[in-house]
Length: 159
Image: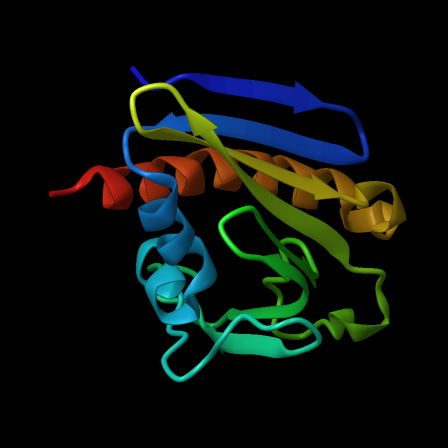
């Protein structure tokens, strides 16, 4: 069972997982938008993660194909950190989320013994999500990050 840790407050979700793969491989899965989309469940063909740029494409997960993966990249520090802002659990096509304050998602990679990589994901800023949808967004993204960390682990550990 891979090492996992959790930290929670009302404003942030923190998750980490130990992946039995070298940092360079894990970094490629996180920082290359098209590869990221494959394991995350979004069609990001032709997109890239670059500071100040937006990456956008349809979610490919059954039941969420009406939702767009839409992030504005803040920082890219090769093999170390990737961060973006997005609107958490923005799934209702009738709602304009653009006036809401986005949360910040930060991925960090750390070397671990045995050529493994510790991946940490933090999503912060939930206290600024409108009260009528804050709890649902927090709850859904909490489960979502657990599933997505498992997805990236499976993809990285594949031969």
